[in-house]
Image (tube, rainbow, N blue to C red; front, side, top):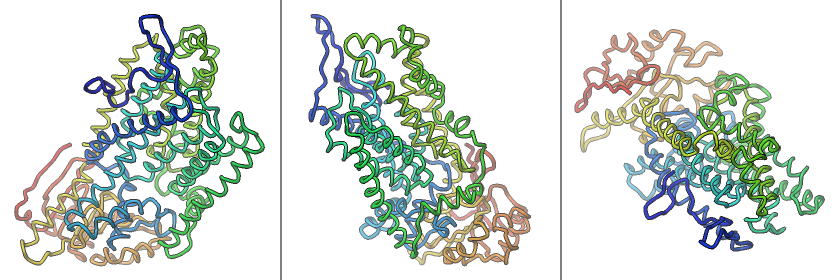
Length: 614
Protein backbone atom coordinates (compact mmCIF):
# COMPACT_ATOMS: atom_id res chain seq x y z
CA UNK A 1 0.00 0.00 0.00
CA UNK A 2 2.83 2.31 -0.89
CA UNK A 3 2.85 5.60 -2.68
CA UNK A 4 3.36 6.07 -6.35
CA UNK A 5 5.88 8.29 -8.06
CA UNK A 6 5.76 11.99 -7.44
CA UNK A 7 3.81 11.59 -4.22
CA UNK A 8 0.74 10.29 -6.03
CA UNK A 9 -1.08 7.79 -3.85
CA UNK A 10 -0.46 4.18 -4.75
CA UNK A 11 -3.10 1.53 -5.16
CA UNK A 12 -5.21 1.26 -2.00
CA UNK A 13 -4.15 4.63 -0.55
CA UNK A 14 -5.64 8.11 -0.83
CA UNK A 15 -4.13 11.60 -0.94
CA UNK A 16 -3.18 13.59 2.11
CA UNK A 17 -5.10 16.72 3.03
CA UNK A 18 -8.42 14.93 2.97
CA UNK A 19 -11.72 16.57 3.68
CA UNK A 20 -12.19 17.39 7.33
CA UNK A 21 -8.53 16.70 8.15
CA UNK A 22 -6.81 18.53 11.02
CA UNK A 23 -3.75 20.34 9.63
CA UNK A 24 -0.91 22.01 11.46
CA UNK A 25 -0.19 25.29 9.68
CA UNK A 26 2.44 26.51 12.14
CA UNK A 27 -0.11 28.72 13.90
CA UNK A 28 -1.91 25.89 15.66
CA UNK A 29 -4.08 23.13 14.31
CA UNK A 30 -7.06 24.09 12.21
CA UNK A 31 -9.84 21.98 10.74
CA UNK A 32 -10.35 21.85 6.99
CA UNK A 33 -14.11 21.97 6.59
CA UNK A 34 -15.57 19.50 4.14
CA UNK A 35 -17.51 20.97 1.25
CA UNK A 36 -21.24 20.48 1.26
CA UNK A 37 -23.93 20.19 -1.35
CA UNK A 38 -22.91 19.74 -4.98
CA UNK A 39 -19.22 20.25 -4.21
CA UNK A 40 -19.14 17.19 -1.95
CA UNK A 41 -21.02 15.13 -4.52
CA UNK A 42 -18.56 16.06 -7.26
CA UNK A 43 -15.61 15.27 -4.99
CA UNK A 44 -17.14 11.88 -4.14
CA UNK A 45 -17.49 11.00 -7.82
CA UNK A 46 -13.97 12.18 -8.61
CA UNK A 47 -12.48 9.99 -5.87
CA UNK A 48 -14.47 6.95 -7.02
CA UNK A 49 -13.36 7.51 -10.63
CA UNK A 50 -9.77 7.86 -9.43
CA UNK A 51 -9.96 4.54 -7.56
CA UNK A 52 -11.47 2.89 -10.65
CA UNK A 53 -8.83 4.26 -13.03
CA UNK A 54 -5.97 3.14 -10.76
CA UNK A 55 -7.49 -0.31 -10.28
CA UNK A 56 -8.09 -1.08 -13.98
CA UNK A 57 -4.41 -1.67 -14.96
CA UNK A 58 -3.84 -3.85 -11.91
CA UNK A 59 -6.94 -5.95 -12.53
CA UNK A 60 -6.06 -6.30 -16.23
CA UNK A 61 -2.67 -7.70 -15.21
CA UNK A 62 -4.28 -10.10 -12.72
CA UNK A 63 -6.80 -11.27 -15.33
CA UNK A 64 -4.01 -12.07 -17.80
CA UNK A 65 -2.33 -14.23 -15.14
CA UNK A 66 -5.37 -16.46 -14.63
CA UNK A 67 -3.81 -19.62 -16.07
CA UNK A 68 -5.51 -22.10 -13.74
CA UNK A 69 -8.94 -23.63 -13.27
CA UNK A 70 -11.18 -22.93 -10.30
CA UNK A 71 -14.74 -24.24 -10.83
CA UNK A 72 -16.54 -25.47 -13.99
CA UNK A 73 -19.05 -22.58 -13.93
CA UNK A 74 -16.18 -20.36 -15.07
CA UNK A 75 -16.49 -21.98 -18.49
CA UNK A 76 -19.86 -23.70 -18.80
CA UNK A 77 -22.26 -21.12 -17.33
CA UNK A 78 -21.00 -18.06 -19.21
CA UNK A 79 -18.53 -18.10 -22.13
CA UNK A 80 -19.54 -21.56 -23.40
CA UNK A 81 -23.23 -20.63 -23.54
CA UNK A 82 -22.44 -17.29 -25.18
CA UNK A 83 -20.28 -19.06 -27.77
CA UNK A 84 -23.16 -21.35 -28.66
CA UNK A 85 -25.55 -18.40 -28.94
CA UNK A 86 -23.30 -16.47 -31.34
CA UNK A 87 -21.44 -19.18 -33.27
CA UNK A 88 -23.93 -22.03 -33.15
CA UNK A 89 -21.84 -24.63 -31.33
CA UNK A 90 -20.81 -25.21 -27.75
CA UNK A 91 -21.82 -27.49 -24.89
CA UNK A 92 -24.95 -26.84 -22.83
CA UNK A 93 -25.04 -28.41 -19.37
CA UNK A 94 -28.20 -29.89 -17.91
CA UNK A 95 -28.97 -26.69 -15.91
CA UNK A 96 -29.79 -24.98 -19.21
CA UNK A 97 -32.12 -27.82 -20.15
CA UNK A 98 -33.87 -27.56 -16.77
CA UNK A 99 -34.25 -23.76 -16.96
CA UNK A 100 -32.17 -23.11 -13.83
CA UNK A 101 -29.99 -20.37 -15.34
CA UNK A 102 -30.83 -16.96 -16.75
CA UNK A 103 -29.38 -15.93 -20.09
CA UNK A 104 -28.64 -12.47 -18.69
CA UNK A 105 -25.10 -13.46 -17.64
CA UNK A 106 -24.02 -15.22 -20.90
CA UNK A 107 -25.48 -12.43 -23.02
CA UNK A 108 -22.87 -10.06 -21.57
CA UNK A 109 -20.20 -12.11 -23.37
CA UNK A 110 -22.41 -12.85 -26.36
CA UNK A 111 -22.64 -9.13 -27.12
CA UNK A 112 -18.84 -8.92 -27.16
CA UNK A 113 -18.55 -12.05 -29.34
CA UNK A 114 -21.13 -10.68 -31.77
CA UNK A 115 -19.24 -7.42 -32.21
CA UNK A 116 -15.97 -9.15 -33.16
CA UNK A 117 -17.46 -12.08 -35.10
CA UNK A 118 -18.20 -10.12 -38.24
CA UNK A 119 -15.35 -7.63 -38.19
CA UNK A 120 -12.18 -9.56 -37.30
CA UNK A 121 -10.34 -12.61 -38.70
CA UNK A 122 -11.45 -15.88 -37.18
CA UNK A 123 -8.03 -16.50 -35.62
CA UNK A 124 -8.33 -13.24 -33.67
CA UNK A 125 -11.94 -14.02 -32.78
CA UNK A 126 -10.62 -17.17 -31.08
CA UNK A 127 -8.36 -15.01 -28.91
CA UNK A 128 -11.33 -12.84 -27.94
CA UNK A 129 -13.54 -15.81 -27.07
CA UNK A 130 -10.79 -17.08 -24.75
CA UNK A 131 -9.46 -13.88 -23.15
CA UNK A 132 -12.28 -11.42 -23.74
CA UNK A 133 -14.39 -12.45 -20.71
CA UNK A 134 -11.36 -12.17 -18.42
CA UNK A 135 -10.48 -8.68 -19.64
CA UNK A 136 -14.11 -7.63 -19.29
CA UNK A 137 -14.17 -8.92 -15.73
CA UNK A 138 -10.99 -7.00 -14.98
CA UNK A 139 -12.98 -3.82 -15.63
CA UNK A 140 -15.87 -5.19 -13.53
CA UNK A 141 -13.38 -5.94 -10.73
CA UNK A 142 -12.09 -2.36 -10.81
CA UNK A 143 -15.68 -1.10 -10.67
CA UNK A 144 -16.24 -3.32 -7.61
CA UNK A 145 -13.20 -1.81 -5.88
CA UNK A 146 -14.57 1.66 -6.61
CA UNK A 147 -17.83 0.58 -4.96
CA UNK A 148 -15.94 -0.71 -1.92
CA UNK A 149 -14.23 2.71 -1.68
CA UNK A 150 -17.61 4.44 -1.76
CA UNK A 151 -18.84 2.21 1.07
CA UNK A 152 -15.85 3.21 3.20
CA UNK A 153 -16.30 6.84 2.14
CA UNK A 154 -19.82 6.82 3.56
CA UNK A 155 -18.80 5.11 6.81
CA UNK A 156 -15.51 6.77 7.79
CA UNK A 157 -15.19 10.53 8.02
CA UNK A 158 -12.12 12.00 6.27
CA UNK A 159 -10.05 12.79 9.37
CA UNK A 160 -6.30 12.25 9.62
CA UNK A 161 -6.68 10.91 13.17
CA UNK A 162 -9.47 8.42 12.58
CA UNK A 163 -11.60 8.12 9.47
CA UNK A 164 -8.85 9.02 7.03
CA UNK A 165 -6.58 6.23 8.24
CA UNK A 166 -9.51 3.82 8.37
CA UNK A 167 -10.37 4.65 4.77
CA UNK A 168 -6.82 3.89 3.69
CA UNK A 169 -6.78 0.67 5.69
CA UNK A 170 -10.09 -0.37 4.11
CA UNK A 171 -8.77 0.39 0.62
CA UNK A 172 -5.64 -1.67 1.27
CA UNK A 173 -7.50 -4.64 2.75
CA UNK A 174 -9.95 -4.74 -0.16
CA UNK A 175 -7.41 -3.99 -2.89
CA UNK A 176 -4.85 -6.57 -1.78
CA UNK A 177 -7.35 -9.32 -0.92
CA UNK A 178 -6.26 -12.37 -2.90
CA UNK A 179 -9.75 -13.74 -3.41
CA UNK A 180 -11.05 -10.48 -4.88
CA UNK A 181 -8.33 -10.61 -7.54
CA UNK A 182 -8.62 -14.37 -8.05
CA UNK A 183 -12.39 -14.60 -8.41
CA UNK A 184 -13.55 -11.17 -9.62
CA UNK A 185 -11.43 -11.43 -12.78
CA UNK A 186 -12.99 -14.77 -13.77
CA UNK A 187 -16.24 -14.96 -15.79
CA UNK A 188 -18.53 -16.07 -12.95
CA UNK A 189 -22.00 -14.76 -12.29
CA UNK A 190 -20.75 -14.41 -8.69
CA UNK A 191 -18.23 -11.80 -9.88
CA UNK A 192 -20.88 -9.72 -11.61
CA UNK A 193 -23.15 -10.16 -8.59
CA UNK A 194 -20.38 -8.86 -6.28
CA UNK A 195 -20.07 -5.67 -8.33
CA UNK A 196 -23.83 -5.09 -8.41
CA UNK A 197 -24.21 -5.96 -4.72
CA UNK A 198 -21.45 -3.55 -3.62
CA UNK A 199 -22.87 -0.60 -5.54
CA UNK A 200 -26.37 -1.59 -4.49
CA UNK A 201 -25.31 -1.39 -0.83
CA UNK A 202 -23.83 2.07 -1.44
CA UNK A 203 -27.18 3.28 -2.78
CA UNK A 204 -29.05 1.47 0.00
CA UNK A 205 -27.04 3.14 2.76
CA UNK A 206 -27.42 6.57 1.18
CA UNK A 207 -31.17 6.05 0.94
CA UNK A 208 -31.63 4.51 4.41
CA UNK A 209 -29.13 6.23 6.73
CA UNK A 210 -28.73 9.82 7.79
CA UNK A 211 -26.00 11.31 5.57
CA UNK A 212 -22.76 12.06 7.45
CA UNK A 213 -21.70 15.69 7.71
CA UNK A 214 -18.95 15.19 5.11
CA UNK A 215 -21.50 13.88 2.58
CA UNK A 216 -23.83 16.40 0.98
CA UNK A 217 -27.40 16.56 2.24
CA UNK A 218 -29.79 14.05 0.70
CA UNK A 219 -32.89 15.62 -0.78
CA UNK A 220 -36.12 13.76 -1.40
CA UNK A 221 -35.25 13.52 -5.10
CA UNK A 222 -31.83 12.04 -4.19
CA UNK A 223 -33.45 9.50 -1.90
CA UNK A 224 -35.85 8.39 -4.62
CA UNK A 225 -32.91 8.00 -7.02
CA UNK A 226 -30.97 5.91 -4.49
CA UNK A 227 -33.99 3.69 -3.87
CA UNK A 228 -34.40 3.09 -7.60
CA UNK A 229 -30.71 2.21 -7.91
CA UNK A 230 -30.51 -0.26 -5.03
CA UNK A 231 -33.79 -1.96 -5.93
CA UNK A 232 -32.69 -2.30 -9.57
CA UNK A 233 -29.24 -3.65 -8.70
CA UNK A 234 -30.73 -5.97 -6.07
CA UNK A 235 -33.21 -7.35 -8.59
CA UNK A 236 -30.40 -7.97 -11.08
CA UNK A 237 -28.48 -9.83 -8.34
CA UNK A 238 -31.52 -12.04 -7.78
CA UNK A 239 -31.75 -12.79 -11.50
CA UNK A 240 -28.05 -13.69 -11.64
CA UNK A 241 -27.98 -15.58 -8.33
CA UNK A 242 -31.54 -16.33 -7.12
CA UNK A 243 -30.19 -17.51 -3.75
CA UNK A 244 -29.40 -13.87 -2.92
CA UNK A 245 -33.11 -13.04 -2.96
CA UNK A 246 -33.41 -13.65 0.79
CA UNK A 247 -30.56 -11.20 1.47
CA UNK A 248 -32.19 -8.41 -0.52
CA UNK A 249 -35.57 -9.20 1.01
CA UNK A 250 -33.98 -8.70 4.44
CA UNK A 251 -32.67 -5.29 3.39
CA UNK A 252 -36.10 -4.31 2.05
CA UNK A 253 -37.80 -5.34 5.31
CA UNK A 254 -35.25 -3.36 7.33
CA UNK A 255 -35.82 -0.27 5.19
CA UNK A 256 -39.57 -0.56 5.77
CA UNK A 257 -39.29 -1.08 9.52
CA UNK A 258 -36.70 1.66 10.08
CA UNK A 259 -37.21 4.44 7.50
CA UNK A 260 -34.47 6.95 6.81
CA UNK A 261 -34.05 9.59 9.53
CA UNK A 262 -35.49 13.00 8.78
CA UNK A 263 -38.26 11.65 6.53
CA UNK A 264 -41.97 11.12 6.94
CA UNK A 265 -42.16 7.45 7.96
CA UNK A 266 -45.48 6.79 6.23
CA UNK A 267 -44.50 8.63 3.06
CA UNK A 268 -41.12 6.90 2.92
CA UNK A 269 -42.72 3.47 3.26
CA UNK A 270 -45.27 4.16 0.54
CA UNK A 271 -42.53 5.48 -1.77
CA UNK A 272 -40.29 2.49 -1.08
CA UNK A 273 -43.09 -0.03 -1.67
CA UNK A 274 -44.23 1.67 -4.88
CA UNK A 275 -40.74 2.02 -6.32
CA UNK A 276 -39.70 -1.44 -5.13
CA UNK A 277 -42.62 -3.18 -6.81
CA UNK A 278 -42.32 -1.12 -9.99
CA UNK A 279 -38.55 -1.30 -10.48
CA UNK A 280 -38.10 -4.95 -9.48
CA UNK A 281 -41.16 -5.87 -11.55
CA UNK A 282 -39.68 -4.21 -14.65
CA UNK A 283 -36.29 -5.92 -14.14
CA UNK A 284 -37.85 -9.34 -13.61
CA UNK A 285 -40.24 -8.86 -16.54
CA UNK A 286 -37.43 -7.91 -18.94
CA UNK A 287 -35.16 -10.76 -17.87
CA UNK A 288 -38.05 -13.23 -18.00
CA UNK A 289 -38.77 -12.06 -21.55
CA UNK A 290 -35.09 -12.56 -22.41
CA UNK A 291 -35.16 -16.11 -21.02
CA UNK A 292 -38.47 -16.83 -22.78
CA UNK A 293 -36.91 -15.73 -26.08
CA UNK A 294 -33.69 -17.72 -25.59
CA UNK A 295 -35.26 -20.90 -24.18
CA UNK A 296 -38.16 -20.86 -26.62
CA UNK A 297 -40.56 -21.40 -23.72
CA UNK A 298 -41.62 -19.52 -20.60
CA UNK A 299 -39.10 -20.06 -17.82
CA UNK A 300 -39.20 -18.10 -14.56
CA UNK A 301 -35.61 -18.80 -13.55
CA UNK A 302 -35.65 -17.51 -9.93
CA UNK A 303 -38.62 -19.76 -9.14
CA UNK A 304 -37.08 -22.75 -10.94
CA UNK A 305 -33.87 -22.25 -8.98
CA UNK A 306 -35.66 -21.95 -5.63
CA UNK A 307 -37.84 -24.97 -6.31
CA UNK A 308 -35.00 -27.23 -7.41
CA UNK A 309 -32.23 -26.21 -5.02
CA UNK A 310 -34.15 -25.42 -1.83
CA UNK A 311 -37.59 -27.07 -1.94
CA UNK A 312 -36.41 -30.25 -3.68
CA UNK A 313 -32.88 -30.26 -2.21
CA UNK A 314 -31.34 -30.59 -5.66
CA UNK A 315 -28.22 -28.59 -4.77
CA UNK A 316 -26.87 -31.74 -3.08
CA UNK A 317 -26.14 -33.08 -6.59
CA UNK A 318 -23.12 -30.76 -6.70
CA UNK A 319 -21.77 -32.03 -3.39
CA UNK A 320 -22.59 -31.21 0.21
CA UNK A 321 -20.82 -29.32 2.99
CA UNK A 322 -21.60 -28.97 6.72
CA UNK A 323 -23.97 -26.17 7.68
CA UNK A 324 -21.17 -24.15 9.29
CA UNK A 325 -18.74 -24.38 6.33
CA UNK A 326 -19.18 -20.77 5.24
CA UNK A 327 -18.12 -19.39 8.63
CA UNK A 328 -15.56 -21.99 9.67
CA UNK A 329 -13.89 -22.75 6.32
CA UNK A 330 -14.80 -20.43 3.47
CA UNK A 331 -14.70 -17.01 5.16
CA UNK A 332 -11.30 -17.66 6.84
CA UNK A 333 -9.84 -18.79 3.51
CA UNK A 334 -11.01 -15.56 1.85
CA UNK A 335 -9.88 -13.13 4.56
CA UNK A 336 -6.81 -14.98 5.91
CA UNK A 337 -5.37 -13.03 8.88
CA UNK A 338 -8.08 -10.37 8.44
CA UNK A 339 -10.69 -12.88 9.64
CA UNK A 340 -10.00 -12.48 13.40
CA UNK A 341 -9.67 -8.72 12.88
CA UNK A 342 -13.20 -8.73 11.43
CA UNK A 343 -14.62 -10.32 14.56
CA UNK A 344 -12.70 -7.98 16.82
CA UNK A 345 -13.81 -4.93 14.82
CA UNK A 346 -17.42 -6.08 15.08
CA UNK A 347 -16.97 -6.59 18.83
CA UNK A 348 -15.52 -3.08 19.27
CA UNK A 349 -18.54 -1.61 17.51
CA UNK A 350 -21.05 -3.80 19.27
CA UNK A 351 -19.74 -3.06 22.78
CA UNK A 352 -18.45 0.51 22.53
CA UNK A 353 -18.70 1.12 26.30
CA UNK A 354 -15.72 -1.20 26.76
CA UNK A 355 -13.53 1.07 24.64
CA UNK A 356 -14.11 4.61 25.83
CA UNK A 357 -11.12 4.96 28.13
CA UNK A 358 -8.68 5.60 25.32
CA UNK A 359 -7.15 2.12 25.50
CA UNK A 360 -8.43 0.80 22.20
CA UNK A 361 -7.67 2.53 18.92
CA UNK A 362 -10.55 4.17 17.07
CA UNK A 363 -12.96 4.38 20.01
CA UNK A 364 -10.44 6.30 22.10
CA UNK A 365 -9.49 8.53 19.19
CA UNK A 366 -13.12 9.19 18.33
CA UNK A 367 -13.63 10.14 21.98
CA UNK A 368 -10.94 12.78 21.57
CA UNK A 369 -12.48 13.81 18.26
CA UNK A 370 -15.79 14.22 20.06
CA UNK A 371 -14.27 17.08 21.98
CA UNK A 372 -13.96 18.78 18.59
CA UNK A 373 -17.58 18.02 17.66
CA UNK A 374 -17.29 14.50 16.22
CA UNK A 375 -19.47 12.53 18.68
CA UNK A 376 -22.41 12.25 16.30
CA UNK A 377 -20.10 11.24 13.46
CA UNK A 378 -18.61 8.49 15.62
CA UNK A 379 -22.08 7.18 16.48
CA UNK A 380 -22.97 7.10 12.77
CA UNK A 381 -19.75 5.30 11.82
CA UNK A 382 -20.22 2.74 14.59
CA UNK A 383 -23.77 2.02 13.46
CA UNK A 384 -22.81 1.70 9.81
CA UNK A 385 -19.80 -0.57 10.41
CA UNK A 386 -22.01 -2.83 12.50
CA UNK A 387 -24.69 -2.78 9.79
CA UNK A 388 -22.21 -3.91 7.12
CA UNK A 389 -20.85 -6.61 9.45
CA UNK A 390 -24.40 -7.87 10.02
CA UNK A 391 -24.96 -7.82 6.25
CA UNK A 392 -21.86 -10.01 5.75
CA UNK A 393 -23.00 -12.41 8.45
CA UNK A 394 -26.53 -12.61 7.06
CA UNK A 395 -25.16 -13.15 3.55
CA UNK A 396 -23.14 -16.11 4.85
CA UNK A 397 -26.25 -17.41 6.61
CA UNK A 398 -28.35 -17.20 3.43
CA UNK A 399 -25.81 -19.23 1.47
CA UNK A 400 -25.58 -21.74 4.33
CA UNK A 401 -29.17 -22.89 3.71
CA UNK A 402 -28.53 -24.99 0.54
CA UNK A 403 -26.62 -28.23 1.05
CA UNK A 404 -24.09 -27.24 -1.62
CA UNK A 405 -21.67 -24.48 -0.57
CA UNK A 406 -18.68 -22.96 -2.32
CA UNK A 407 -16.28 -20.24 -1.24
CA UNK A 408 -16.95 -18.18 -4.38
CA UNK A 409 -20.61 -17.80 -3.36
CA UNK A 410 -19.40 -15.49 -0.56
CA UNK A 411 -17.46 -13.13 -2.83
CA UNK A 412 -19.98 -10.24 -2.46
CA UNK A 413 -19.50 -10.36 1.33
CA UNK A 414 -15.80 -9.38 1.18
CA UNK A 415 -16.39 -5.60 0.73
CA UNK A 416 -18.99 -5.77 3.53
CA UNK A 417 -16.40 -7.23 5.94
CA UNK A 418 -13.57 -4.80 5.34
CA UNK A 419 -14.83 -1.75 7.31
CA UNK A 420 -15.03 -3.97 10.42
CA UNK A 421 -11.59 -5.41 9.60
CA UNK A 422 -10.16 -1.89 9.36
CA UNK A 423 -11.83 -0.90 12.60
CA UNK A 424 -10.52 -4.03 14.34
CA UNK A 425 -6.93 -3.57 13.18
CA UNK A 426 -6.94 0.10 14.14
CA UNK A 427 -8.43 -0.79 17.53
CA UNK A 428 -5.43 -3.03 18.16
CA UNK A 429 -2.95 -0.28 17.27
CA UNK A 430 -1.61 -0.13 20.82
CA UNK A 431 -1.03 -3.90 20.91
CA UNK A 432 0.43 -4.43 17.44
CA UNK A 433 1.97 -2.45 14.62
CA UNK A 434 -0.66 -1.64 12.04
CA UNK A 435 2.04 -1.22 9.38
CA UNK A 436 3.47 -4.67 10.17
CA UNK A 437 0.00 -6.24 10.07
CA UNK A 438 -0.68 -4.56 6.71
CA UNK A 439 2.63 -5.79 5.24
CA UNK A 440 2.04 -9.38 6.42
CA UNK A 441 -1.52 -9.27 5.09
CA UNK A 442 -0.32 -7.90 1.75
CA UNK A 443 2.37 -10.51 1.15
CA UNK A 444 0.23 -13.43 2.33
CA UNK A 445 -2.39 -12.39 -0.19
CA UNK A 446 0.17 -11.86 -2.96
CA UNK A 447 1.55 -15.38 -2.41
CA UNK A 448 -1.95 -16.90 -2.32
CA UNK A 449 -2.99 -15.08 -5.49
CA UNK A 450 0.20 -16.09 -7.32
CA UNK A 451 -0.12 -19.76 -6.35
CA UNK A 452 -3.80 -20.16 -7.17
CA UNK A 453 -3.58 -18.13 -10.39
CA UNK A 454 -0.36 -19.60 -11.80
CA UNK A 455 0.11 -23.08 -10.29
CA UNK A 456 -2.93 -24.73 -8.71
CA UNK A 457 -4.88 -26.83 -11.28
CA UNK A 458 -3.01 -25.32 -14.20
CA UNK A 459 -3.04 -28.56 -16.16
CA UNK A 460 -6.80 -28.36 -16.66
CA UNK A 461 -6.38 -25.20 -18.73
CA UNK A 462 -3.02 -25.99 -20.34
CA UNK A 463 -4.36 -29.18 -21.88
CA UNK A 464 -6.51 -27.15 -24.30
CA UNK A 465 -3.41 -25.43 -25.68
CA UNK A 466 -1.84 -28.86 -26.24
CA UNK A 467 -4.96 -30.02 -28.10
CA UNK A 468 -4.85 -26.96 -30.33
CA UNK A 469 -1.17 -27.55 -31.15
CA UNK A 470 -1.83 -31.19 -31.96
CA UNK A 471 -4.66 -30.18 -34.27
CA UNK A 472 -2.47 -27.60 -36.04
CA UNK A 473 0.41 -30.09 -36.39
CA UNK A 474 -1.87 -32.69 -37.94
CA UNK A 475 -3.34 -30.31 -40.57
CA UNK A 476 -1.26 -29.83 -43.75
CA UNK A 477 -0.27 -26.26 -44.50
CA UNK A 478 -2.36 -24.77 -47.27
CA UNK A 479 -4.40 -27.96 -47.55
CA UNK A 480 -7.77 -28.99 -46.28
CA UNK A 481 -8.03 -28.74 -42.49
CA UNK A 482 -8.72 -32.16 -41.05
CA UNK A 483 -10.77 -32.73 -37.94
CA UNK A 484 -9.30 -33.89 -34.65
CA UNK A 485 -11.36 -35.92 -32.19
CA UNK A 486 -10.65 -35.68 -28.45
CA UNK A 487 -12.02 -37.92 -25.70
CA UNK A 488 -11.78 -36.71 -22.08
CA UNK A 489 -11.53 -39.54 -19.54
CA UNK A 490 -11.78 -36.92 -16.80
CA UNK A 491 -14.53 -35.69 -14.48
CA UNK A 492 -17.23 -33.95 -16.49
CA UNK A 493 -16.73 -30.23 -17.14
CA UNK A 494 -13.10 -30.65 -16.12
CA UNK A 495 -11.54 -28.34 -18.72
CA UNK A 496 -12.53 -25.30 -20.79
CA UNK A 497 -14.40 -26.26 -23.93
CA UNK A 498 -15.44 -24.87 -27.32
CA UNK A 499 -15.38 -21.21 -26.27
CA UNK A 500 -11.63 -21.66 -25.69
CA UNK A 501 -10.97 -23.83 -28.78
CA UNK A 502 -13.21 -21.89 -31.21
CA UNK A 503 -13.20 -24.34 -34.07
CA UNK A 504 -15.63 -26.97 -35.28
CA UNK A 505 -12.73 -29.02 -36.58
CA UNK A 506 -11.85 -30.22 -33.08
CA UNK A 507 -14.59 -32.60 -31.94
CA UNK A 508 -14.61 -33.15 -28.20
CA UNK A 509 -16.45 -35.55 -25.94
CA UNK A 510 -16.51 -36.31 -22.21
CA UNK A 511 -18.59 -38.68 -20.13
CA UNK A 512 -21.58 -36.61 -19.08
CA UNK A 513 -22.75 -36.51 -15.46
CA UNK A 514 -26.23 -35.06 -15.97
CA UNK A 515 -29.01 -36.37 -13.69
CA UNK A 516 -30.96 -39.20 -15.27
CA UNK A 517 -34.09 -37.05 -15.62
CA UNK A 518 -32.30 -34.69 -18.04
CA UNK A 519 -29.93 -37.09 -19.78
CA UNK A 520 -31.91 -37.55 -22.98
CA UNK A 521 -32.48 -33.80 -23.41
CA UNK A 522 -28.79 -33.06 -22.83
CA UNK A 523 -27.93 -35.68 -25.47
CA UNK A 524 -30.35 -34.03 -27.87
CA UNK A 525 -29.17 -30.40 -27.47
CA UNK A 526 -25.50 -31.46 -27.76
CA UNK A 527 -26.01 -34.11 -30.45
CA UNK A 528 -23.97 -32.31 -33.11
CA UNK A 529 -20.82 -32.25 -30.95
CA UNK A 530 -21.26 -35.75 -29.50
CA UNK A 531 -22.39 -37.73 -32.56
CA UNK A 532 -18.90 -39.01 -33.44
CA UNK A 533 -18.85 -41.19 -30.29
CA UNK A 534 -22.10 -42.89 -29.34
CA UNK A 535 -21.93 -45.08 -26.26
CA UNK A 536 -24.10 -48.18 -25.82
CA UNK A 537 -27.41 -47.80 -24.00
CA UNK A 538 -26.81 -47.21 -20.30
CA UNK A 539 -28.67 -48.77 -17.39
CA UNK A 540 -31.61 -46.74 -16.13
CA UNK A 541 -30.71 -44.00 -13.66
CA UNK A 542 -26.96 -44.19 -14.40
CA UNK A 543 -25.07 -41.29 -15.93
CA UNK A 544 -22.22 -41.73 -18.39
CA UNK A 545 -19.71 -40.70 -15.73
CA UNK A 546 -21.11 -43.23 -13.24
CA UNK A 547 -21.02 -45.88 -15.96
CA UNK A 548 -17.36 -45.08 -16.63
CA UNK A 549 -16.39 -45.10 -12.95
CA UNK A 550 -18.00 -48.51 -12.45
CA UNK A 551 -15.29 -50.11 -14.63
CA UNK A 552 -12.91 -47.53 -16.18
CA UNK A 553 -10.79 -49.95 -18.22
CA UNK A 554 -13.76 -51.78 -19.77
CA UNK A 555 -15.66 -48.57 -20.64
CA UNK A 556 -12.48 -47.00 -22.03
CA UNK A 557 -11.96 -50.07 -24.20
CA UNK A 558 -15.55 -49.76 -25.53
CA UNK A 559 -15.18 -46.03 -26.24
CA UNK A 560 -11.86 -46.44 -28.05
CA UNK A 561 -13.24 -49.21 -30.26
CA UNK A 562 -16.35 -47.19 -31.18
CA UNK A 563 -14.97 -43.69 -31.61
CA UNK A 564 -11.26 -44.20 -32.21
CA UNK A 565 -10.38 -40.65 -31.01
CA UNK A 566 -7.17 -38.98 -32.16
CA UNK A 567 -6.39 -37.62 -28.69
CA UNK A 568 -7.28 -38.92 -25.24
CA UNK A 569 -7.04 -36.74 -22.11
CA UNK A 570 -6.86 -38.63 -18.83
CA UNK A 571 -6.00 -38.06 -15.19
CA UNK A 572 -4.16 -41.36 -15.04
CA UNK A 573 -3.28 -43.85 -17.69
CA UNK A 574 -5.51 -46.87 -18.30
CA UNK A 575 -4.31 -50.17 -19.65
CA UNK A 576 -6.69 -49.83 -22.59
CA UNK A 577 -4.84 -46.79 -23.90
CA UNK A 578 -1.55 -48.61 -24.47
CA UNK A 579 -3.37 -51.69 -25.77
CA UNK A 580 -5.03 -49.58 -28.47
CA UNK A 581 -1.75 -47.98 -29.54
CA UNK A 582 -1.89 -44.67 -27.67
CA UNK A 583 1.31 -43.11 -26.33
CA UNK A 584 1.84 -40.43 -23.71
CA UNK A 585 2.44 -37.06 -25.37
CA UNK A 586 2.22 -34.51 -22.51
CA UNK A 587 1.42 -34.36 -18.84
CA UNK A 588 1.13 -31.71 -16.17
CA UNK A 589 1.04 -32.42 -12.46
CA UNK A 590 -2.18 -31.32 -10.80
CA UNK A 591 -2.63 -31.39 -6.99
CA UNK A 592 -4.26 -34.84 -7.12
CA UNK A 593 -3.46 -36.68 -10.36
CA UNK A 594 -1.44 -35.54 -13.39
CA UNK A 595 -3.36 -34.41 -16.47
CA UNK A 596 -2.12 -36.57 -19.33
CA UNK A 597 -2.53 -36.30 -23.10
CA UNK A 598 -2.29 -39.46 -25.22
CA UNK A 599 -2.08 -39.59 -29.00
CA UNK A 600 -2.44 -42.46 -31.46
CA UNK A 601 0.88 -44.01 -32.40
CA UNK A 602 4.04 -41.89 -32.20
CA UNK A 603 3.88 -38.27 -31.04
CA UNK A 604 2.67 -35.88 -33.72
CA UNK A 605 5.24 -34.34 -36.04
CA UNK A 606 6.86 -31.25 -34.56
CA UNK A 607 5.95 -32.14 -30.98
CA UNK A 608 7.68 -34.02 -28.23
CA UNK A 609 6.66 -35.80 -25.08
CA UNK A 610 6.94 -33.51 -22.08
CA UNK A 611 6.38 -33.71 -18.37
CA UNK A 612 5.68 -30.40 -16.68
CA UNK A 613 5.63 -30.44 -12.88
CA UNK A 614 3.85 -27.72 -10.91
